Image (tube, rainbow, N blue to C red; front, top):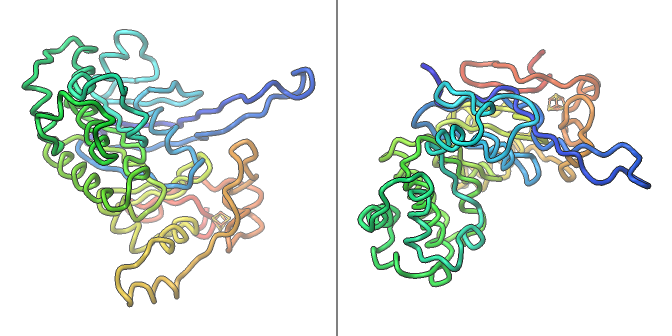
Length: 325
Ligand code: SF4
């Protein structure tokens, strides 16, 4: 089966600052995304997990061409998005939506909810009558009366519902959800995740669901990719990844997810892998395996050569010398 979206060798590097005294020195390079290949099928949800600063939001923006890549390609429905510009890029992006992390900053406070939700229709020259926006508001669990009000009149969770309505009004086939619940109270997070899962099933839209912990994506994902310092270090279907994580970083992320039962908690303690220190800067990525400075089981080879992402079991790929390579 052909994928809906194929990312091939995606790279996003930024040249930073003026280059030392008088701007004559070498300008440091921030390697936000440093060679990522992945694919997403129609109607599938891929969870993308990693610590802050690992490049996952940048990757989400590259996939829908909100950012141009430094290198690599994104093939969406057979079309190379990286070669498109102007009207053809706008046309391709009609099939894509994005839900941002901050429901407070993402909505224009001077616009009514109706104007916010119907704006993408106007941008793409589509019919934008009241019935269409009211139906969309209903789908995200807001009353039709919300249309005439302004964003500041709503709670964080309700504002995120408005953002979701706006992202889905054009009936996209691919949706990037960039940490859509991390700015919300824990008490409303589950409601938004359930809503997205429900809409995904009803509308058949494929999703990239970005989060910084594995607990949030467990519920909603079909497959999960774990990202560390600009690279995907492990990728597997959900059941395999949570039952048999291979990469030491994935094992540490899973150990950090609170277990629900006493048995689960005891198992987690027994298997606990701890990762020390902070994630290194994306301007000073360690040599060899980029995780070796924090890996509790690093070997001499790990400091020298970068392990490639290799499929070790059906549907499970990992970048780690513990499994050969
Ligand atoms: Fe740890 Fe080495 Fe595997 Fe990297 S390659 S995760 S340093 S064991």
